[in-house]
Length: 320
Image (cartoon, rainbow, N blue to C red):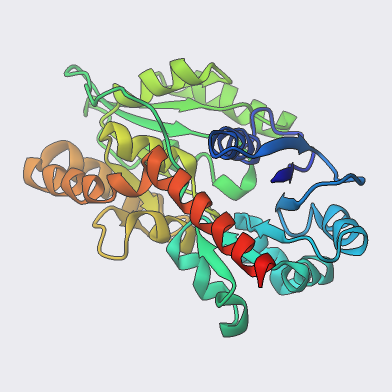
């Protein structure tokens, strides 16, 4: 098949959508398909359109539907789609109706959709091929925060939790990600000057990021909304326990019985979790064990197989 993947233009360098599109392109080419990635679909003889983001890709979705009405259309839903846009935005809702299939990136995403839409929705967990193994340092308990700094990520919750801990405790927060506006940049610099326990590395290479993650004791994902954080996949593959805000996108990745959640915006509760991980070896072992149960979900082979099943279903539908 000739497949076009739309990834809307973004101000975020190396965005999650771009990573997803690159990975899916590789998998689909391995399966024998011809794939091109565009920021907007403007026409062509593609057999299938796979659009990332219901709202931002709406122009491409509508154009493909008009010009290629018999060709299958798949829409992958992001966190802002699921937890904001499809509730309030007419174009996002119209994209859901035009799609022959929908993709969500974690199991809780299904709960945001009507029964009718769930019937045409498939779960495709993201994956990571990282081969590093967990090797945290012994001198300090390192808390990693990874992701570009924007309001949807509540990016300073971990450093705020740091202030709830005894200053004599050997704990540090290492934050990786670009500050996407001047206000975020100023806050990073202010925290850096204020507390030597906090380090902001800015935007660094993926390899450097993964080495930092592998040498950390825990990863904090404090997001307000998530479609399915790829950094959770990476932490699970490496074996780094995750402390996550209890929002649907994180629960859908880690499982409902995962013991490492804290209430959204609650740095006091996060500080208690960090301290418990640092001082309670049995809890830390249980947290890591629960995460490793989910590890197979995020294997590259599992993501590739999910895409293959999706396309086989689409082709069977076309043959009917």
